[in-house]
Image 1 (cartoon, rainbow, N blue to C red):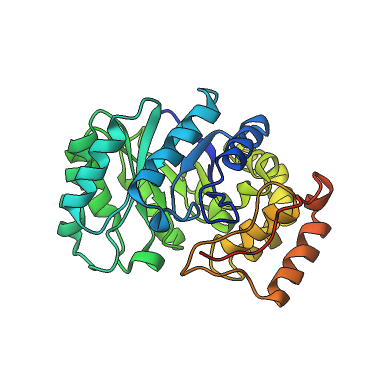
Image 2 (image 1 turned 30 degrees about the vertical axis):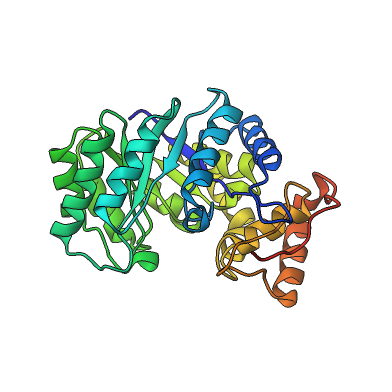
Amino acid sequence: METTGCGTAIVTPFSADGSVDEPALWSLVNWQVESGIDFIVACGSTGEAATLDEEEWLRVVRSVIDAAAGRVPVWAGCTHNSTRVLVRLAGLLKRIPGVAAVLSANPYYNKPTQEGQFQHFLALAHEVDPLPVCVYNVPGRTAANLEPETVARLAAAARNIEAIKEASGKLAQFTELAHTLPRGFRIFSGDDNLALAAIAVGAHGLISVASNEAPAEVTRMIRAALDNDWDEARALERRLSQLFEANFWESNPAPVKTVLSLMGKCGDSLRLPLVPPTAATRARLERMADELGLLKRAPVSQGARSEVF
């Protein structure tokens, strides 16, 4: 895998009736590409993939690929806590032209052992081969940590397991991954606020939430760090640090969608069990976005309002 830099874990916009808002999705993808993002990840946790049915999931992946039109790579999220179901879904994903890689998180709820996770990801890799696989370690959501030793076993066992999105929040785990994995294996931070530290110890980039709202700035921050321009990287991180924090004032992606709606980029509708931010949080988000200059870039769309489905 040659991909490095900043990728956006893109939101899935919904219309007021709860359906996927494909025109808004196309517009978001175009804006991301025009802003210089390095790649896009469709149907991750920020994309509310857990609330999409199978047909919607496949349609969103195809829409992002079509909108990107080959200008940047598009990765597709594919996660399930049943290995058999995951393999079936991955077989469907493999048929879609233009998928550059598959991103898959730890099996959630089951709390598998390291051996269970090893076999789970290996089955996925075999199903989608030769498509590259990026394993996604996010124990805060799945209750299962993927240890660096297991990642190294996976890299040795399957040629197409080529990357990891590491979101354990542990800098020591990034360091161990960088020291353990073979050259060419890509390590991406899954946390905006740890991206610079992760790159400093050997990571290759970031899969970002905040780049939904500030794609050009977050991309510049990551590229500066990868180019060893730490003065520029740190200056951008200081500017964006409040945005990184604000996106998790309530459950992701509720704050992100609120800010995007204030920017006029899409509505802020969510699907249950996620609900809109409280009025107090919304007011804080609006103040923060205004201070960062995000609200000067586009008028607020007429239809942007809170809905829950």
